[in-house]
Length: 312
Ligand SMILES: Nc1ncnc2c1ncn2[C@@H]1O[C@H](COP(=O)(O)OP(=O)(O)OP(=O)(O)O)[C@@H](O)[C@H]1O
Image (tube, rainbow, N blue to C red):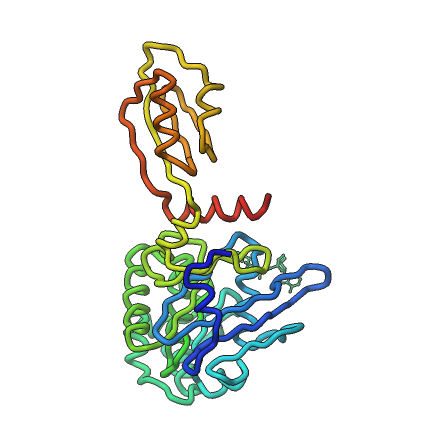
């Protein structure tokens, strides 16, 4: 695992919001969470990334006390997850769990507020989640994105210290997403810890100040998005071949440092662990590349590079 902020971050301190110590969870022979240790702190916005089946939802289930761990310890604010949830310290928006159908948006949100130990006023919750204008509508008449916003309203029905979101913006349009993340930033600025699992890597890049990459139930990387990109160690190189001289593709494929090779007609796209060395070698082959571009990997490419490497 990357040693960026991870070693420090795994150590629980007195103000730790979430602490996992060597947590394991299996379903039959599938080990969904495998010796996971981490600590999250107040005010952090943390993205949980990982390919399908990496253990993200299982981790969130353990964190919320919805399932018991087989071994290890999960603590929220120094208590068990169930105690923290019962005390109203945790708001959650999960993928699973249907909404009650034959009630209006206002009724279901009002119920969420009534059940919360430290609720916000219903109108405030409706407005913040962007559902005030559809408050009178029956829940079973909502679109997928509107349903997500109602789940968001329920997750923020009261004062809490930790907000847990499992793929929260699935189905939301661009405007709703932007409004959603603006609200979440606001929540984090007020000292709350926001933890969200997502497959939208650009959201993780833009929103999270810390990124956790899970793979086969283990923490593969833990750091800022910039640290994760640097950890992937590769840069991308693109250029066009001149076309005048035929180029032996085998020579290109044998360039030093290459971790990925693609050629579409005259356009060559590479990934390299040592871009300087690769580019020098291109010139040494007598090739004069046109439109040469060298750039760092985006979070998505870094994520693919890291998880592919771990799968080898
Ligand atoms: N209730 C269950 N019974 C049996 N196996 C399960 C159960 N829940 C999860 N698993 C298995 O545990 C592993 C981790 O699943 P999990 O849902 O936590 O992954 P995930 O990272 O959330 O995946 P996705 O991105 O697809 O939502 C997978 O191999 C999955 O098939």
